[in-house]
Image (cartoon, rainbow, N blue to C red):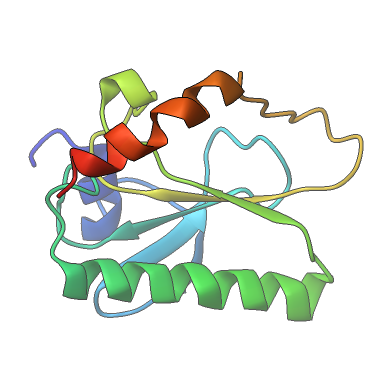
Length: 133
């Protein structure tokens, strides 16, 4: 993609602060960090989101997610991490190149992601599963 900032980062046409890299994936610090060491992991090839990346490439990317998390644990003592990926505009995806956020967390960091839950939907589970058959 010509105007994709993440593609430009992979090509070296835009600045990034590399944490880790493989042939298929690239990990770098998020330019708008929510916490210290907030990292993005992307496939080097352009895939819009989880729906269009082939499984082999997704596996390569998630392997890098794991390696970065282990690096942070071993070198920095970080043992609380949130991993987030949004796919689609209505899911709050803003950069339309698949990416995973690695967000180190600690008590009192102010980054409280809370969902509104709907326990009443449990009664629909059987019908929901039926639609998947």
